[in-house]
Image (tube, rainbow, N blue to C red; front, side, top):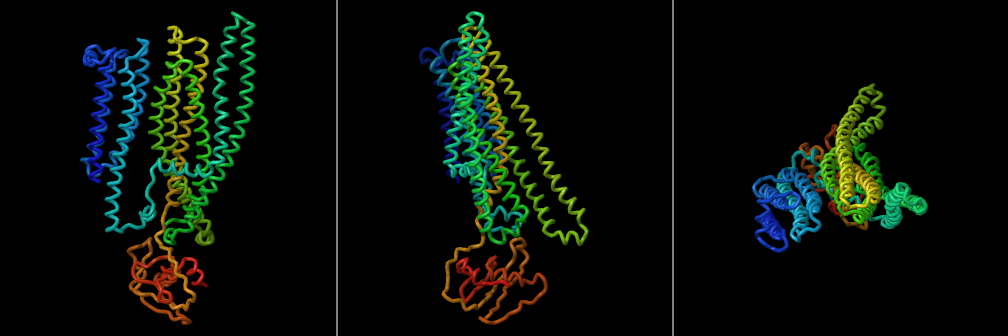
Length: 597
């Protein structure tokens, strides 16, 4: 652990030194040739449209940020919480710095037709070193997490108290958002054939849709310019309309096949998730079912798996479609006007920051929602399965109120989700409007300056509208994905959980005499580890002998049978059949041999 911290300090120093050195080199290259005077002159004659000294300030800010992270890691006893909370700041700073590179490029290109070599290098350095700095911050978080896990492991060896509160987390490490997303994608990978089919039709659909704004712009341009040459305008209008009809037919056919492929694919994924979860549940030890109530488990098996499969099915489809369309739109926009095409790269990162902040909060609320739904289902299952008892005590209204309280708690969480979503939509819609207005204003400026053909401006605006719609849908994908992560985290934890009970025995005797021996057995249930049910119990039952276990409620009669069935393992001592510990017997053999009437 100490070596990791030293390595982090070295990485911080090296990255900072490289960042500063490269920045100074780029400033010296801000001219026709390398000279230190180029570096000095920018301090005295700063101009936002010609100087790059502002990029040096971003370099110093990056250096201060990674130095802060390294200091927290080295100096704080428990740095994990602080580093995790500030990691969102690190991500936001990295994204905003990356967005400043195209902004600076447009500013520099406004007054001159070419840029110096140092300017291009500085813009690239500003972009990539921002990413490197954030990656370094992520490594700080991983080292701090490893430190906490090591401390927790040491404490768990000497502290077994409060088992019931933490039993469900004992064998299940908390999975991070990225890990859960990768787990969901692994299920998608299983059905690669149907995904390949869906992706193929999706690619055809998206590519055809890319051409629609261009030919729409051509149609509008033909109508606007009809006065100069009506015959030529009519021919252009006819050609563009014919191509749009062909594109629409191909797009509709590909869209249908795409939807059918993905629908069947994700039905198979839902089956796989539910099968894996059910298989993991039936292989858990009995103590697991003592801790987790049936209603909660059923909710995970039904509602949570349904949420996982539905959101994955929708969001992967929408994500890939919009990514292909965004890529095609940006390519067309670059060919039409590279200056205008940089505008979205300036504003979109700001939307990404808002999505990141909202996604973290929404992930937290989504997980709380699924837990609240599971608890309400648990109350419903408990009441309905014991309806005779509820009716005999006339508790119908009391149980109805208890169930309503659970539903009200779920509604409170959903209300927080709704307010958060409203705020996210406000920010998203605001910046999308900013993109459209900026493109319209800057495009008009370029047309008036003679740097853009006015006919192409219409097509560019249509591409920008399509791009804005793609960005909006990608934001909704992120929201849906966070909802899926909230449901999937607990499902994945159940699937990955390793039972405490060891059933790996392989002893299968040819004959069983039936001698049963309890040798100094002490036992307590996992839900009540401090309450010893059996204390140093020893007795022997010979083959053919009939023995009655007699005692008051809670004295351990059923516990002896549970131990004999190998539902639990004793805290101390052994349970033997024919002189062999019951743990050594093969799982199926012992349960076929021991019969309960």
